[in-house]
Amino acid sequence: MKLSSILLPAAAIGLAAIGGTDAQQTQPACSSVYTRKELLSLTASEWNLYKAILTAMQRDGWFQWFAYLHRTWFGQIHGHSQFFPFHRRFVHEWERVGKQYNGAFAQPYWDEMRDYRTPASSQVLTSNWVGGNGQGANFCVQNGFQAGWTMTYPNSHCFSRNFRNNGNPTSWYSPEYISSFVQTSANMAAFRPGIEFSLHGIVHLDIGGEMSQPTSPNDWIFMLHHANLDRLWWQWQNNGHMWTMDGPNADGSAISINSNIAYFNEPIRNVMQLGYGNMCFQYASNPIRRRDLDSTAENRLIHKLPQDMLTKWFPETAKKTEGIAAPPITPSQLAPGKSIPYPGTLSDDWIRMHGYNIADVRKVEATARSFVDDMKKVGYTSN
Image 1 (cartoon, rainbow, N blue to C red):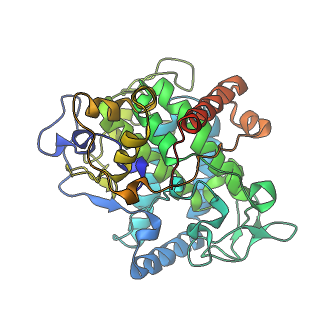
Image 2 (tube, rainbow, N blue to C red):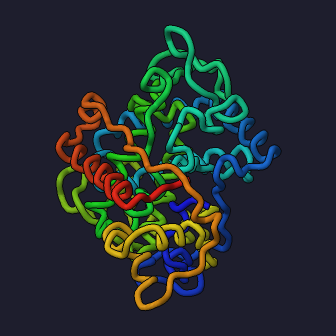
């Protein structure tokens, strides 16, 4: 069980909106919702169908089109609060196109926190799934369903990946840290840079090749990655921030749910709440309807962290333990693990390409290192 999907209170994961309309909601509830699954949970028949759909989308120029859109609007969708609503709408538009080929298509996500220790060894990056690192002088990908593809935008070239650190990227962000961040971010002005400058950036940069360019939608990992980031946003929304939209817009003005989404020219409020309007999907780890939570990983935190550390980094979890005895835990749940490693950092070139403020990025990275330091101080280990 992944901490990134279980540390929110049960009432927060469930969404009562299906049974009663939120006061901010102006769109009708969906009559039905479909589920975006984690990639590795797809059945063989589902994956074969999806590969056929994606191959047809490449044939018909859709990878080129979405790469073009992302590059064209690049400066207006990164580094400010357009980031999450634009990419939610962007991935949904991609999914809508896929459904035109077959209505069963639902864009999966990659739970990258599961693979954070040694990303290059992820099962996702094998020949049975999306393939691995590129080969040769041009880093052309030779396995996975995109193997041998010729991409046509912004010019004709082989489909490429170039894993950082000589093919062996350093660690990404742990599920504990991401779960902590979901619990501690008070507003979008904090949540957006904390995710954009951490998990968002490190996956793009470490996969490299297509993923390290403004034309990154050429690599289907882009859609897997941004579906996962959207899933994290949805978790945060369900932690008391369903309609939270603040911080700067692309032009420096204050953003709100009534601001238009870049390119799509529709209000942000249209994409804020899953299960309404055109957002008729849910995530397998965060269904719209209420569900019970498996408390295994949460119990590990409760038993392993001193109360002050729990309150500092996991305030929602800490609140649940106030005045009550710690829940029982089995020996296997306390089995020795490994200390959490420091996550990798973004390069100055990557930061400049996005127009980020270097000091702001380094501040986010320093917070992540401080989290690791605190976990090490108390001897916390993780699987």
